[in-house]
Image (cartoon, rainbow, N blue to C red; front, side, top):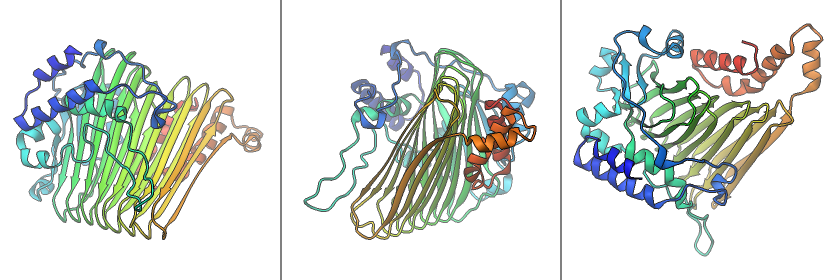
Length: 450
């Protein structure tokens, strides 16, 4: 994998970051690609020839929105973000400035590459602190004399190590103590070169009692043999509130692998929404580490897989402190010969009493050829908790479909109505009207009713 060493040699940056990149690449070279024998990757295999991977080409800045890809223009016309970045491959090609009143309060919103140069102290303090190169050891703290859960297989960190070593850019958000950012901030990531890869990183830091919403969107045309590898670090300090939305709508042929992890402090809240609609293979990990007492994590997701798409979602709700609450609701739709995978774990450490944790996964099957694998799990090491988990997989209600068809509604429109209704209890918990409208539009296209 000499080409990765050559690519790393071309990356500019401070010595501390270069050393971390080098260390991450060395780790990457020692790890195998996770196989089906690894429990967390049991139903998903990524076939990748690392020696053949080449980085996405550089892109120039554009001066007007009209020069952006049509899909980005369309999305920007209906978004309500207060400021945004547009990245094409490794480069920021367009941006809007943060409102002056927020900048005056110390809020920082820029691309990560610029943040390393302009805000080195803050970036160095938090970068890699939540999503390191290696897979985090989320072994449950168990009582003496008992056997805790096994540590993750080291190979689970293969792609995280590559992302840590070779990330080219991404977004950086920093909100000082007590500052509330009312309008969402956003990043729109596109790729335009087939047969390449991009490695990106998002770092959101909300200091004590701060508040911010960040929308992270990915979109492209069909790009055979293309890889999007990423990491998202969410630092939610005591009393802070962060809402993070990820909308993945890559084109056919893209393999998407991303690890998202939040570190949630005392009486802090992390609301996350993961939307998976595009790409040929997608593996998304969403983890919440409830570090402080009274921490709260809401984990929502919806996905719609059709044709031969393969969507894998891995989740972890790790309760490390008492009196914390987490609520997970994942809902998906599988059509044609698509495959859906959900593997979710609630871990409760010794001493994390009064934990209140819920995990629910529901799948709607639109085709007899589609497949679904669901593995909800609990590991509890405290004796005063309330935890529940469950999963259901079911076909379309034929009576409901007949009822709609009998009133002159086409099959495509009827299925759209039923699918939208099925996903509504996720969408109904998202207080971002433009985001909900955009997702509903994607769903309509998926069922052929747009």
